[in-house]
Image 1 (cartoon, rainbow, N blue to C red):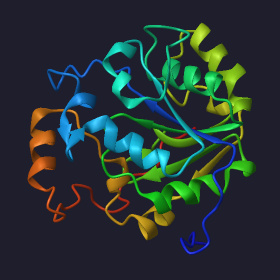
Image 2: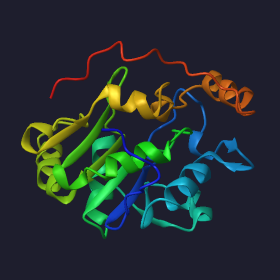
Image 3: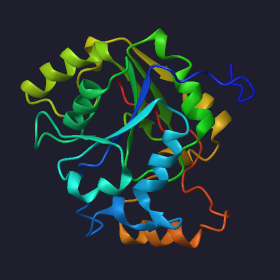
Image 4: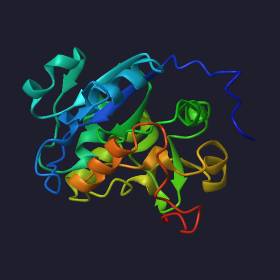
Length: 222
Protein backbone atom coordinates (compact mmCIF):
# COMPACT_ATOMS: atom_id res chain seq x y z
CA UNK A 1 0.00 0.00 0.00
CA UNK A 2 1.34 3.41 -0.99
CA UNK A 3 1.10 6.22 1.51
CA UNK A 4 -1.47 8.83 0.50
CA UNK A 5 -0.30 12.43 1.01
CA UNK A 6 -3.92 13.64 1.21
CA UNK A 7 -4.16 11.79 4.54
CA UNK A 8 -1.01 12.89 6.37
CA UNK A 9 0.12 10.98 9.44
CA UNK A 10 0.61 13.13 12.55
CA UNK A 11 4.26 13.40 13.55
CA UNK A 12 3.57 13.75 17.27
CA UNK A 13 6.15 11.81 19.21
CA UNK A 14 8.95 12.09 16.64
CA UNK A 15 12.16 14.11 16.81
CA UNK A 16 14.21 14.88 13.73
CA UNK A 17 17.91 14.12 14.21
CA UNK A 18 20.52 15.52 11.84
CA UNK A 19 23.96 13.92 12.10
CA UNK A 20 26.70 16.47 11.48
CA UNK A 21 29.71 14.65 12.83
CA UNK A 22 31.50 13.57 9.66
CA UNK A 23 34.96 14.74 8.69
CA UNK A 24 34.03 15.87 5.14
CA UNK A 25 37.47 14.65 4.09
CA UNK A 26 36.56 14.14 0.44
CA UNK A 27 34.93 17.57 0.24
CA UNK A 28 37.89 19.40 1.76
CA UNK A 29 35.63 21.65 3.87
CA UNK A 30 32.54 21.27 6.06
CA UNK A 31 29.88 20.28 3.54
CA UNK A 32 27.07 21.11 5.95
CA UNK A 33 28.05 24.78 5.69
CA UNK A 34 28.31 25.04 1.91
CA UNK A 35 26.11 27.72 0.26
CA UNK A 36 22.77 26.32 -0.83
CA UNK A 37 19.40 27.86 -1.70
CA UNK A 38 20.21 31.25 -0.27
CA UNK A 39 21.62 29.86 2.96
CA UNK A 40 23.75 26.97 4.08
CA UNK A 41 23.31 23.33 3.15
CA UNK A 42 22.24 22.21 6.60
CA UNK A 43 19.69 25.03 6.87
CA UNK A 44 17.65 23.57 4.02
CA UNK A 45 17.56 20.13 5.67
CA UNK A 46 16.71 21.61 9.07
CA UNK A 47 13.93 23.75 7.60
CA UNK A 48 12.33 20.78 5.85
CA UNK A 49 12.40 18.55 8.92
CA UNK A 50 11.12 21.36 11.15
CA UNK A 51 8.05 21.53 8.92
CA UNK A 52 7.35 17.83 9.50
CA UNK A 53 8.38 16.93 13.04
CA UNK A 54 7.90 18.02 16.65
CA UNK A 55 11.51 19.02 17.15
CA UNK A 56 14.77 18.89 15.25
CA UNK A 57 18.05 18.43 17.05
CA UNK A 58 21.59 18.37 15.73
CA UNK A 59 24.25 15.88 16.78
CA UNK A 60 27.62 17.59 16.56
CA UNK A 61 30.85 17.82 18.51
CA UNK A 62 31.45 21.35 17.15
CA UNK A 63 28.29 23.24 18.20
CA UNK A 64 29.91 26.64 17.71
CA UNK A 65 29.70 26.08 13.94
CA UNK A 66 25.92 25.66 13.97
CA UNK A 67 24.53 28.20 16.44
CA UNK A 68 22.82 30.03 13.56
CA UNK A 69 20.32 27.15 13.31
CA UNK A 70 18.77 27.98 16.66
CA UNK A 71 18.01 24.34 17.44
CA UNK A 72 19.03 22.07 20.28
CA UNK A 73 22.48 20.56 19.80
CA UNK A 74 23.90 17.48 21.50
CA UNK A 75 27.31 15.80 21.42
CA UNK A 76 28.29 12.18 20.97
CA UNK A 77 28.23 10.14 24.16
CA UNK A 78 30.94 7.95 22.60
CA UNK A 79 33.18 10.39 20.69
CA UNK A 80 35.20 9.04 17.82
CA UNK A 81 33.03 6.00 17.14
CA UNK A 82 31.38 7.24 13.97
CA UNK A 83 27.81 7.55 12.77
CA UNK A 84 26.39 4.89 15.08
CA UNK A 85 27.58 6.93 18.06
CA UNK A 86 25.88 9.99 16.59
CA UNK A 87 22.67 8.06 16.06
CA UNK A 88 22.78 6.74 19.62
CA UNK A 89 23.34 10.24 21.02
CA UNK A 90 20.42 11.66 19.05
CA UNK A 91 18.07 8.91 20.20
CA UNK A 92 19.29 9.20 23.78
CA UNK A 93 18.68 12.95 23.95
CA UNK A 94 15.37 12.97 22.04
CA UNK A 95 12.41 13.93 24.20
CA UNK A 96 10.13 11.75 22.06
CA UNK A 97 9.75 8.00 21.69
CA UNK A 98 11.00 7.94 18.10
CA UNK A 99 13.45 9.80 15.91
CA UNK A 100 13.78 10.23 12.18
CA UNK A 101 17.51 10.37 11.49
CA UNK A 102 19.26 11.81 8.44
CA UNK A 103 22.76 12.83 7.45
CA UNK A 104 23.60 16.51 7.00
CA UNK A 105 24.24 16.16 3.25
CA UNK A 106 20.95 14.85 1.84
CA UNK A 107 19.37 17.67 -0.21
CA UNK A 108 16.41 15.84 -1.74
CA UNK A 109 14.42 14.62 1.25
CA UNK A 110 10.90 13.71 0.22
CA UNK A 111 8.11 14.70 2.63
CA UNK A 112 5.82 11.93 1.39
CA UNK A 113 8.44 9.25 1.92
CA UNK A 114 9.29 10.54 5.39
CA UNK A 115 5.60 10.47 6.36
CA UNK A 116 5.24 6.96 4.93
CA UNK A 117 8.07 5.73 7.16
CA UNK A 118 6.63 7.51 10.20
CA UNK A 119 3.26 5.90 9.59
CA UNK A 120 4.80 2.50 10.45
CA UNK A 121 6.77 3.55 13.52
CA UNK A 122 4.59 1.61 15.97
CA UNK A 123 5.14 -1.63 14.07
CA UNK A 124 8.85 -2.11 14.82
CA UNK A 125 11.86 -0.60 16.58
CA UNK A 126 13.46 0.40 13.27
CA UNK A 127 11.66 1.42 10.09
CA UNK A 128 14.25 1.50 7.34
CA UNK A 129 13.85 2.04 3.60
CA UNK A 130 15.58 0.01 0.93
CA UNK A 131 17.29 2.04 -1.75
CA UNK A 132 18.64 0.74 -5.02
CA UNK A 133 21.93 -0.03 -3.29
CA UNK A 134 20.58 -1.55 -0.09
CA UNK A 135 19.32 -0.37 3.26
CA UNK A 136 19.46 3.33 4.12
CA UNK A 137 20.17 3.59 7.87
CA UNK A 138 20.73 7.35 7.65
CA UNK A 139 17.18 7.90 6.40
CA UNK A 140 15.26 5.85 8.91
CA UNK A 141 13.04 5.83 12.00
CA UNK A 142 14.35 4.52 15.33
CA UNK A 143 12.54 3.88 18.61
CA UNK A 144 13.92 4.18 22.14
CA UNK A 145 13.99 0.38 22.47
CA UNK A 146 17.10 0.46 20.28
CA UNK A 147 19.18 2.35 22.83
CA UNK A 148 20.56 -0.51 24.98
CA UNK A 149 21.47 -2.49 21.88
CA UNK A 150 23.20 0.49 20.25
CA UNK A 151 25.12 1.00 23.49
CA UNK A 152 26.14 -2.66 23.64
CA UNK A 153 27.33 -2.58 20.03
CA UNK A 154 29.44 0.54 20.63
CA UNK A 155 30.98 -0.85 23.81
CA UNK A 156 31.86 -4.03 21.91
CA UNK A 157 33.55 -2.01 19.17
CA UNK A 158 30.89 -2.72 16.53
CA UNK A 159 30.55 0.58 14.69
CA UNK A 160 28.43 -0.41 11.68
CA UNK A 161 25.09 1.37 11.70
CA UNK A 162 23.21 -1.91 11.32
CA UNK A 163 25.31 -3.89 13.79
CA UNK A 164 22.57 -3.85 16.46
CA UNK A 165 19.74 -4.80 14.08
CA UNK A 166 19.68 -8.52 15.00
CA UNK A 167 18.71 -7.48 18.56
CA UNK A 168 15.70 -5.33 17.65
CA UNK A 169 12.56 -5.50 15.53
CA UNK A 170 13.37 -4.18 12.07
CA UNK A 171 10.81 -3.47 9.38
CA UNK A 172 11.96 -2.82 5.83
CA UNK A 173 10.18 -0.33 3.62
CA UNK A 174 10.78 -2.19 0.39
CA UNK A 175 12.60 -0.81 -2.62
CA UNK A 176 9.51 -1.04 -4.81
CA UNK A 177 7.48 1.00 -2.32
CA UNK A 178 10.19 3.66 -2.19
CA UNK A 179 10.24 3.76 -5.99
CA UNK A 180 6.49 4.37 -6.08
CA UNK A 181 7.06 7.57 -4.09
CA UNK A 182 10.57 8.58 -5.18
CA UNK A 183 11.31 6.83 -8.52
CA UNK A 184 14.88 8.11 -8.75
CA UNK A 185 15.77 7.33 -5.12
CA UNK A 186 16.85 10.94 -4.83
CA UNK A 187 15.98 10.94 -1.12
CA UNK A 188 19.17 8.96 -0.48
CA UNK A 189 21.44 11.01 -2.69
CA UNK A 190 24.19 12.75 -0.74
CA UNK A 191 27.03 15.15 -1.39
CA UNK A 192 30.56 13.91 -0.69
CA UNK A 193 32.91 15.62 -3.16
CA UNK A 194 33.28 19.01 -4.85
CA UNK A 195 32.07 17.40 -8.10
CA UNK A 196 28.90 16.23 -6.32
CA UNK A 197 28.31 19.73 -5.00
CA UNK A 198 28.90 21.53 -8.29
CA UNK A 199 26.61 19.06 -10.08
CA UNK A 200 23.94 19.79 -7.49
CA UNK A 201 24.28 23.54 -8.03
CA UNK A 202 24.09 23.13 -11.82
CA UNK A 203 20.81 21.28 -11.42
CA UNK A 204 19.19 23.71 -9.00
CA UNK A 205 16.79 25.04 -11.65
CA UNK A 206 14.59 22.02 -10.99
CA UNK A 207 15.83 19.91 -13.88
CA UNK A 208 18.17 17.61 -11.94
CA UNK A 209 18.21 14.02 -13.09
CA UNK A 210 18.63 11.11 -10.78
CA UNK A 211 22.03 9.44 -10.75
CA UNK A 212 20.54 6.17 -9.56
CA UNK A 213 19.19 3.19 -11.51
CA UNK A 214 16.00 1.54 -10.37
CA UNK A 215 16.15 -1.28 -7.79
CA UNK A 216 19.05 -3.19 -9.26
CA UNK A 217 20.85 -4.08 -6.02
CA UNK A 218 19.66 -6.36 -3.22
CA UNK A 219 19.18 -4.89 0.24
CA UNK A 220 21.88 -5.44 2.82
CA UNK A 221 21.35 -8.56 4.88
CA UNK A 222 20.59 -8.14 8.55
